[in-house]
Image (cartoon, rainbow, N blue to C red):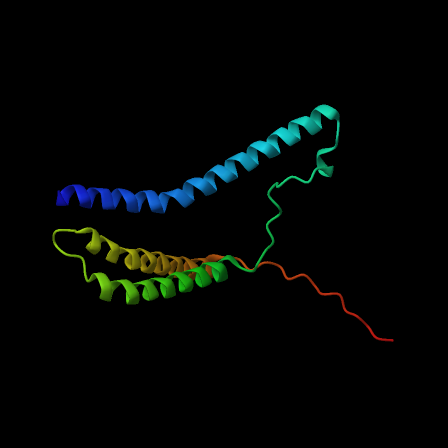
Length: 144
């Protein structure tokens, strides 16, 4: 009976965690499907595509060098991993030898920490080998 309850508990956890992902995926799918139908109808009527207000991907604005973005993401993931570890590890304890569900939850901060360290290493490499982008000259405003 205890094995059945443990299995049902794990099943409920997975269903609870996967439901938001499935809902977001369905909303995204149906939005893309509606955009496609709108585009096909506009082409059939001869309306220029540029006049349509579709959710097409916008041009990616440059937020600075790539290594800066990687470094900020890496530091963020490190802080999240440390925070989750500070909360989960005292509650659940370290990973035990029999790998109970409680012990598996203590892997979560390790994943965040590993990804953060990886992004920090990547930012160091990109900083070393990335060519600086040309700086656009700002317009000088003269008073007078």
